Image 1 (cartoon, helix red, strand yellow):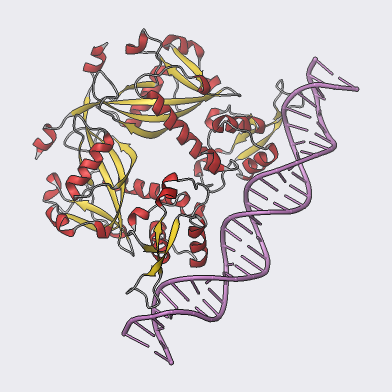
Image 2 (image 1 turned 45 degrees about the horizontal axis):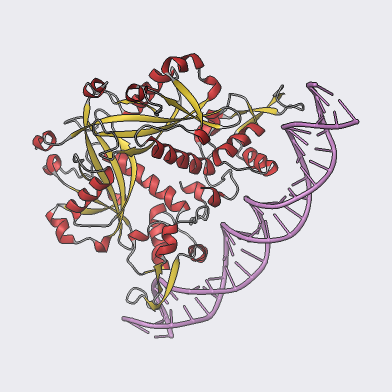
Amino acid sequence: MLDLYLKQTKCLVALDSIIFGFDGEELKLLLVKRGIEQEKDVWSLMGGWLKPDESLNEAAERILFELTGLNNIYLEQLSTFGDPKRDPVERTVSVTYKALINVSDYDLNISEKYQARWFSLKKLPELLFDHEQIVRHAIDRLRSKAAFHPVGFELLPEKFTIPQIQTLYEAIFDSKFDKRNFSRKILASGLLVKLEEKQRGFSKKGAFLYTLDKSKYEKNTSYNLYFVPNVESLI
Amino acid sequence: MLDLYLKQTKCLVALDSIIFGFDGEELKLLLVKRGIEQEKDVWSLMGGWLKPDESLNEAAERILFELTGLNNIYLEQLSTFGDPKRDPVERTVSVTYKALINVSDYDLNISEKYQARWFSLKKLPELLFDHEQIVRHAIDRLRSKAAFHPVGFELLPEKFTIPQIQTLYEAIFDSKFDKRNFSRKILASGLLVKLEEKQRGFSKKGAFLYTLDKSKYEKNTSYNLYFVPNVESLI
DNA sequence: ACAAAAGTGTTGAGGTTACACCCATGA
DNA sequence: TCATGGGTGTAACCTCAACACTTTTGT
């Protein structure tokens, strides 16, 4: 019976994270140059190998930490890719994760150290292996999630304005929304707490700052209130 | 550089399928007894090992075929589980798939041969490893998909009645829907083609049969028309 | 004739869209 | 004072939810 186990082929298991960031205008992707692709102008997702005593989530977190120094990041498992030819060196199976981070949280020095760079989603460089396919898949997942769930607060600073959220959603869906309808919808979720302060320096009037009501956000109750008009045409 | 690959730990990669079936009344799960669990009263998902030259999807299809004789089954990748202690024999990573089949398509003789059995979702036996968790996860995914997409026609016969679809949806969500609203919604999708025939033998009046308009189904355009009232309370 | 399931329409409420003007401020 | 972005209200429309009676036919 144990033979059944012994005879089977084993694979390397990689964890690759698609790291989305938002700089206030555009959606970005954090890419690195490592090992194999060092020479060529090929970038890859943040990735590494599973170690013997880690769960998949733990490994994804560890790798993210090793490559960026960031901790406590929103990570969500996406699909697993395992085409036998996807990695020409050796058979690997890659479990992918989607991470959302606020660009300003990410220290650029560390980024230098690791040869990491933010790329606009609209101007991605050539990517390693099947990473382009993985990225497309992650964008799809981000969109369908954002359409039905309040998501993406991880991409914003602690305090943010409604125009900022709207810009983020517009970046995610690559389209424009009516600001009156958008703010009504996002406020109706009851997840935002209005602060006294205004954002200064960006616009002349200044926009009110909000924070997320984390306890409500974690309850995660809202479902069919979606945040985007004409969902079906966008997804 | 290649050392980077050689030093890494390798894992067994399993493909496990959660096979949902519908018998006209209840949602069922197809489980087997194999290898390790032969003796005990422990059942497991349909599963097997990845072979060197297969993609994950190919392997999941092959395994399903080997264990059931069924071909051309709807399969969709779900999450990957890789807790280091999930399989006590050896470290394995399990990529899970959701399959939907029509119970009557499944030959019971083969089922005898493989020690496979349909179990009502409400009366599942003890399951191997973390398979219970995997099943719970699959049910969640089936529900959130069914709430927003017309799904589950794979679980019905070629020709089906509207009351049958409704019963299926009621089984998926374990609740009751208003038949007027339900039939209006499902017909509004434009995916159903009404036939001349009626179903006979089940009810006295007989219900009209429908088939799926496959070309429209594959275009898969509908999105925010969801098929279930009060989605948020159900998911 | 009756039991059992199929089929069908309306109304009120609530949500979504489309749309345009005034406000606050820094330069 | 003017340019820039922030903030707000309303009306028409549409969709959803709730609700009950008639039809068909096998027994």
